[in-house]
Amino acid sequence: MMTLELDDDTARLLHQLMEREHTGAVQLIRQALADYLGAKQTEPPPELMADIISTLPKLPSFAGDPLTIQQAMRDEWR
Image (tube, rainbow, N blue to C red; front, top):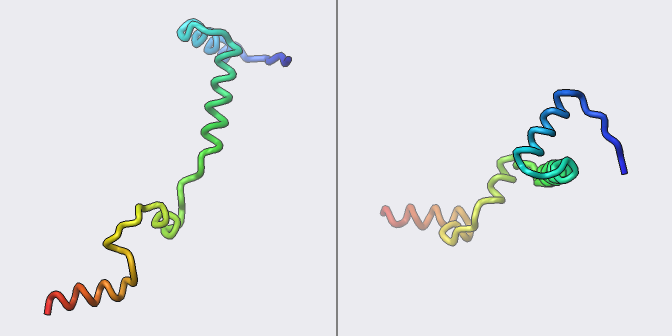
């Protein structure tokens, strides 16, 4: 068991949430911690272009060697 000291504004906010949600402080704090930990455990968005590309769906039209695909497309124009 742990005792938490809250400043007046935070205590007032907690009390307002308890009334609005019709639940106790323990349940609200548990939910807030679970939400916080869930948000922290999500994978950060990719920053490199290669990482972003790796998340795109694999399309059959882009399967194979890109140079071969490009040459085949150019051959269609001739």
